[in-house]
Length: 436
Image (cartoon, rainbow, N blue to C red; front, top):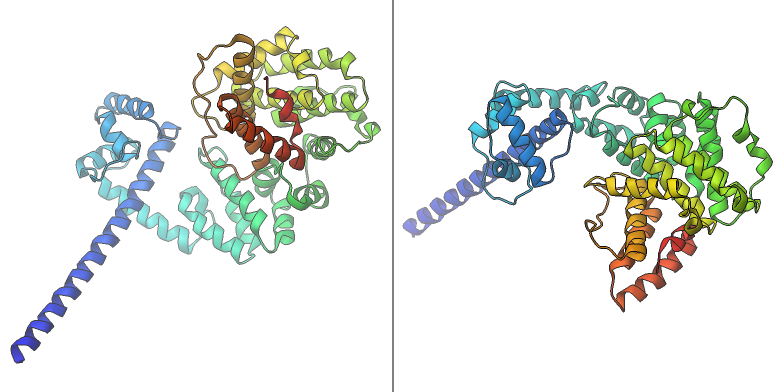
């Protein structure tokens, strides 16, 4: 009996040892995963690009070779998760990657991250400049309705950081789901960065229950804003009404023809909305058949001076307005405009970053398939990261793109649901763009 008891206690000790050792191993894995994730972020920041494709691993391998510390593209692909692997990177490889970003070694990098994390957790002011894990402090401030801390953190953000758009989407989604939305929206309007991150960057086209429209008028319009921001408010609200088949008073937009107003004083988003509204007002006024060529001359002139991302928005909003007005196919007879749209479509990057680029991709595929019967294009792709705003537009455009390549009976089902969806969500502009 004594022998059995001894064996039982020995067994329990072994079990406790196994469980403890397993927990310690798991904890170490979690810690390593955290440090590896931070190292990946630091490398992406260094090269100013997200590394999610093998070709980007190959480019990074070339940079590391030029730096004097070669690492193969396949090793990098495993580290960045482009190629699935259960193998952990060697410490020597991690040391090389850390030296590339300016740290002495992987051990030193981990020590620095650990110290910075402690600072971000316990001293949240100015912590955003330290790394994205200070979102912990940001999330807690929002949950506690601590608007002052939230705005302090937003004011400390580097607006040129490559992951800023992720914060825009995070903040926009937080506002949408917050139980104290009214105070949240007011607080954001009282901070320069709050206005930029939410009111000027998130721009919620979906506008559930008019929360965004109301906030623009009640809070944002009463804060210190520029002429372009005031014009944005008027354009946003007027365009929303027209797409919902409601008329607006054209006399309230006489500033569109204001003497001395030049487009170079406005942000590209403001320009795109002004051009969109001008087309829609003429459509409402039943003069668009006479004026559309003049509008397209201006769109072409302005978009040709812009980089691809900005021009995509100007062209996409113009396409929406023309399609809603029922004259997009007529507008394609305007050679400069048509060539500009198709040129930008063919310049679309391998990863799409905006609804504007998504619209151009759809129009390009629809046009070439219908008019030229050519399928030399790359297959259509989806947006490269999560969008928590303009969800209705994204669903409409991606569904319309799917229709181009679907076979029956799926094509019929897609069309039936798309036309129902666009009617309910005021996205009917997409229907005229499906060439079939």
